[in-house]
Image (tube, rainbow, N blue to C red; front, side, top):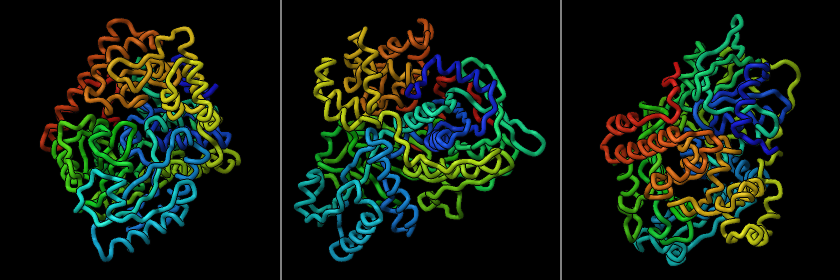
Length: 569
């Protein structure tokens, strides 16, 4: 099996949670949590991972979708962080996830005639020599005319030249889910909609967790030698629930991105633009551009951070300062807001807080990990398992995840070369097969097999033609999606890639997945209503002036998992 996460596996996982004693239980299904679960499983440990909502439902589905070395961290002289991130980018592109992580070109526009080119070139030279140019092309210097040929959308007076460089990108939610499936493939119990409601103790040590199935209310004790708290912005909350004092604090910083159609910005490459506080990325994303991000303190609802009109205006104002044809609110197809779990420091500015990660054994049997950046999730997962070693009996092997491809990576390159034959066999256009290969890799056979007895599934999802109906079915049969929101927001990105934000597809998708999830007419109606209400709340929150008003609107929307307790402590 390929780490299938379907309804049958979900029930089996519940039985295992109550019956077995695990070496490590990981709390949190973001990229660091699934990375830690995969790391532990491939060391030969007995592992369980529980997540209260869905895989990648928090920060790990709302990033800038880049695997990048952190070019701007060079300015902060964080050379170690950049070198580590570039090595991880290289591993993802070449060995671990070539089906999911792809090179992407960026233009760094130059506006100062004297100092900026040598200064930026030196930084990019370091970027290349630290490992950045092994799997992608190195930097290339461009005149103003050359830069404008690469990005014709720029105002002529917005630059005097530019430097083209490469980074890498991935669909973050899909990548996180695939890491989770790979962990399951190597024996980890991976279970979503499973909330930690208490910690088990023996004398002075943590000996496991009590969990609740937030779909049906069942509770069970899960015994473990060590527990890893990998809950990102919820780290402090789980710390309080455990009754242990934390060794570090986590501060949430809100980052907002907008999504606009590809034809609104005429360009052959993305862009990185300096702002007074940070940087703004314009990132190619299939038929779209992702533009972001903001960097502001957030101390309201952690589950559903809300973007405000002010956030969106900030992004538009900065990107329009260099575009010949400005973007307007009407151009925006999607908006998403995420929270970075930054290690709280002395500085008031969240853009200056550390992107480094911290690991601490906060009490016997309990390890917490937080901070870091998406790109270095694998290193963070290994560090968390290393820290938990002291509580796990017996000798533990070293981390080997730098040698473990994710499910779907094996055979991917050969299938790319065979895309035309595969397309002919299934009656699909070759571009459709390439799209599927870049989402599923060699699991594409598993996806397409679901349509053998029902060729209708190879038709596009109504109102969301970039995706096939079989993808929605596969999301619930193999990828752990349990609610309409999981399918439209994370297994596909319909919620940000179409102006209707999934509303026009919601009923059709609900009916497609209903037989597998055993939904009756009432359940279908409820799922559609909950999803559409969420979209309406997000749209309204994005017209509000400040965080408090936007949060109040967004928090009023119904929850797809109504038995969740929020906050947990």
